[in-house]
Length: 101
Image (cartoon, rainbow, N blue to C red; front, side, top):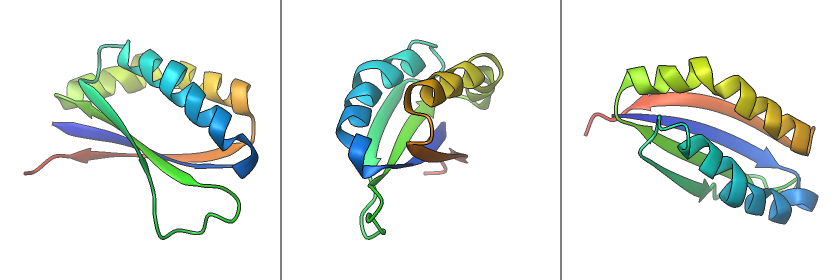
């Protein structure tokens, strides 16, 4: 099993609208690709929130092939939609992890 983790720092002034969009639009779009079996949204604690909160969105893929399918076929479009909607209102970085236990 693999976890695709997207860590996002969101500007304070858009955080409420951004979270609503994330839950109502973005996550359903990502899950609609059929590459992931589940997702969760977490808020990072004990970090500097002066410019806004930091969140982690985690998507679980049953195989590396499914994760690769997402990256190859869908990731660029999803990222473009995010930047079209929010511009420089957020900063994101991505990582992939293999579940060991």
